[in-house]
Amino acid sequence: MGEEFVDMKKETKEEPGSQRAHFVLIHGVGGGGWCWYKIRSLMENSGYKVISLDLKGAGIDPSDPNTILSFDEYNKPLIHLLSSLPDNEQVILVGHSAGGLSVTDAIHKFAKKIKVAVYVAASMLRSGFVSEQDVKDGVPDLSEFGEFADVYDMEFGLGPEKPPTSVVIKKSLQRQIIYQMSALEDSTLAAMLLRPGPIQALQSARFKEGEGTERVPRVYIRATNDRVLKLEQQDVMIRKWQPQHVYTLESDHSPFFSAPFALFGLLVKVAASNFDCSD
Image 1: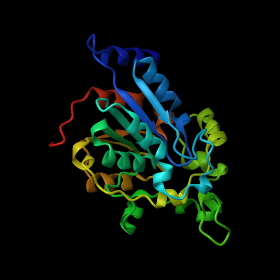
Image 2 (image 1 turned 180 degrees about the vertical axis):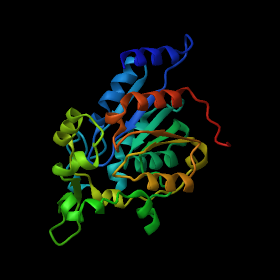
Image 3 (image 1 turned 45 degrees about the vertical axis):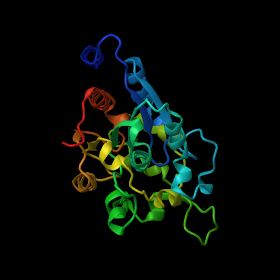
Image 4 (image 1 turned 30 degrees about the vertical axis):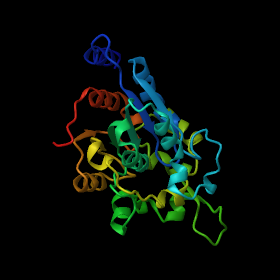
């Protein structure tokens, strides 16, 4: 594995004076910037600039996820980051799982600041959750593991008679569902750090399409053994909103743990590619 990494670095050397890509990594529901620690280490060791962001109520952000009821509020850290970038700076935006919703929101609002949008086993919905079909396409169906209450721990910030305000997969099922191909130490770390995600905020995701719909090139990275966002769901979203490129990883729902070197290699390949949105 060490030799493979050294060779990869040789293959991705850039000309003197060239500027390395700037990556912004977005976690899925319940996760945080910590999810990307392996990828970030590989990237920064290779000279790339990397930000692994915590969305509102995630990671070390102190907000209570039960108080975050709108997607705009949840995605505010990403929107703030992009709005603060200089007009001449572009990033490669990478979203995992529900982080794909954050990526889509951003490409509609900040097309000029995004070089490429990358969806890693992610919900890639052009307009968000507008219809029942969108929900079927982009929301995990974990019914094979039991009823909703058997799979998720829920919190009810608006009262017990109201729908849940945050959810997280039960610790006893996390490895089986999310990390079945990942190293035990990574799934153990995740079990310690995963937080309930603001379910009402995510369900409210609706996007008013902007110029990014056509301007920003998109890449989808499929995860073949994903038990959260099934491969069939990934392929449906790819067919409905075709990206410029599709890559495939033999991984579970969390390739940043189960296939970090392969995922890193694909992201480096994306950074080195010239995309034409007219393709």
